[in-house]
Image 1 (cartoon, rainbow over the protein chains, first blue to last red):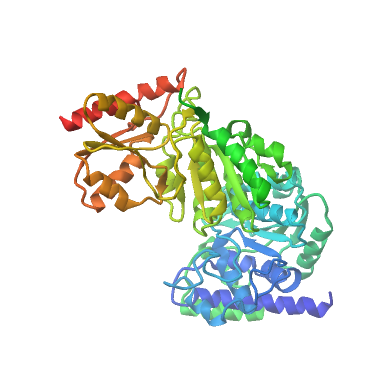
Image 2: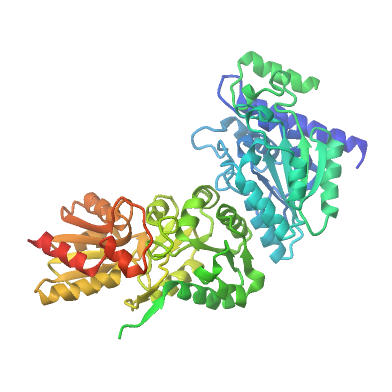
Length: 275
Length: 310
């Protein structure tokens, strides 16, 4: 990739963050700002660099699949889908209102481009395992990407899925941990430590790549590397900052799911521009 | 001599038969395929058989993923594990998006008599029927099991089939139609709605009552959801009182369903539920001993009928 392409991806990530802030709004209505912003660079790299997507035919059998297992960060995916014209961008202003196609958590029955219903934490990787198994049966070249939260890794089902993925040698499956270090009630290290994630995923038979989850070059390199790994799934451990880009929210559990005042809303947009 | 056959053997055999013609059918198991008889599928189609380990929650969400690639996954375990341990996965991964996932709750009710309360599932009908988009089927015998498994493979949507572990008498002859209630024995004084193992007990009770000059209709209700409510209400209106019989908790199962329908349709008949009272199961030396211990017998149906008509 050319240097300017990274800049373009960074611009996409910036736009996604602006859209997230717009979806949260300045009226004090609660929204998952923190975990959406920590995933923004990862999601930008997936949708605008790595994945084969077809917004005109969301069910294109040759598409790559993306699952947001940490479904509460739906705003980040809605922003990317809107940017790709899966639906009219004006829809984002209706998020979480009655009859909106954009639900509080991803819903494949309502939103074009959403693959599964996630947000009851811990289930997305398992669904990804099922899709990866099905694609292998069909000799498909499509690949499956699943973003999980680090707080979410307290869910036992994740480790059931991790075991299944290595049992079935799912090298078409990439797990990405958005390791922002903060769960809803506080820092993970203080609230419920999920341990040494790199050693854990390695012990479960995954190829592990540890990266700065806000460095576009590292993200793209890791996604490329994952494609070269055969016979086992790849886990990208992305070190991130909760609320990244909105300075007053960075690293703060208080902005896991909180409203913004009009003043904070305007400040958030300025922070993102000046990042 | 009445023919008997186990529902789980019918389940495994039918999956193998259907898979020969339908390459989309896949089987997922959680280390109990020797009991669920998914082992028959593993032997016939190892490339479409997925051992998911003792991890039911993952198994159900993986089945959801497989269905998203157009496969028709059948995921089986003991009823207590598939319906209980994987409940939120059934709810969120499968039922909210109405995916084409087929679940088999095997060794249901008290039918795993030896293993005791941890393995005996008296709650699954209640748990499954409260889920929007879910279909719930409880076959009366092996013949109906085969028909229902075929229906599940051929029709889209989340579906749950509840199977008994033991050999049961063959009592059904008609083709399976979802929602239909089957009048296996005509009667005009009283009616019994039964599912699963209790259908043959109800038929036995009807014979005993006939000798006493009492005419009891026996309805086999294999389709808990959907169910033809008008047919249930009509059947209730024709008789003086009604009995329900099931190897399940008295809460949330067939008995509850019949009462709900009677209320909605103003049937206004007294209903006596033959079901397991608000208790967990326990170990016993055989199935009949356990069914008798909890009052799930032909005699109990007979006595209930006599009491209701007194």
